[in-house]
Image (cartoon, rainbow, N blue to C red; front, side, top):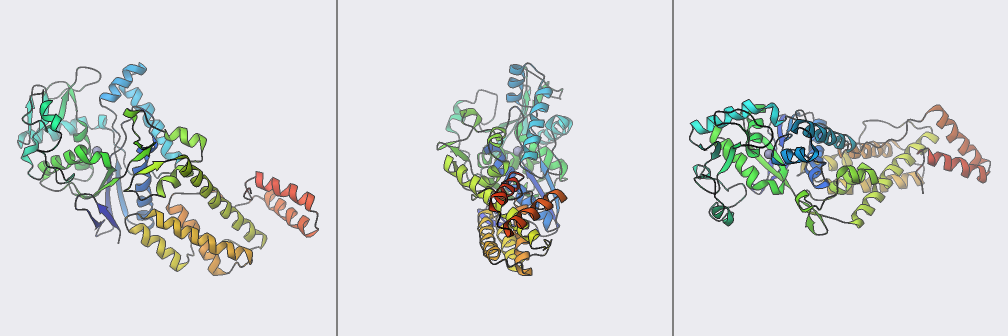
Length: 446
Ligand SMILES: [Zn+2]
């Protein structure tokens, strides 16, 4: 049974009672390169995705792409391209980041601009049901029609946003009402019953969920903690209005990444881009650094964390190489898919308990400790080989697909040559061959 912490009830809830899991994650607005704070929820849910696939669940994972909004319109003007050229460029950059970080691609990644008629239809429905009203060429959702508004974010609407009441310049019933359809004069727009405009951000996600999951309550809706209010609160309100059902059984939110004690944010110009980080360090360094934290807590991104992550990734890869090298020398074939029962159980149990990746890394350390002792004794018993297979499994379910073993004939000959030189005590030549093997990535570097 997989349990995940739900932000609304503040309890761990069972993800699903059958073998089907419907997941939705709020994706990026593709107007720029993404930063490492943006990738955190995607990386954590990637581990959940992998766990579910491993346990043979049918995973319906939808991750939207916001390809139209004010930021896109402004940036397109700045770069002197059309909105669709701009969003396509940054969508491709985003997909390249996902690939680089070895993130499994969700089943569907819908774009808003492909769903404009569905958005209009959904808004019309809310207007007909009197949850939304037309004001000029805009359409607003009337928040006070939902009695439980504020429950998800644990906020009382009357105490919320004191400035909102003052800034209610639009023709809104209440300052908290939010736009479902926006009249737009600048940039791309679409015809609608209310005039030319575009859908609001809070509406697009509900429309995707309503459409892709046929109006059913989904198992889990995820996103960064800053999306809880107002974005997710507003998604929930619209879904309740349209279907009289809760949008999600579990609302999952991850903590921020702070840089120099401040939240990483494009608007604060306080960001490290994923592509820049991964140019300087191996992408697995970022994956490890993010996953080695409780996903609900903030991460204070420091130089020290990077140093530790670099060293751990080097240790993992080095150990895999060392073990596969030694088993080759000892003429032992690495067994596949034979797991060490208790280590395997620990890994699956930790990950099933609110995606506890940090404890999973602790299990990995213990396995490496055991296997290092086995290496010292040249003990390649079935039990130890099973621990090795389980180690590879643990790394893979966390999304690390290190390359090791699978030696070519040429490399096999080189390994034999080194072993023979050592037997002959020709250490000078042996050292040269060893450094060749290190440079080829066959042996870990010291
Ligand atoms: Zn969303």
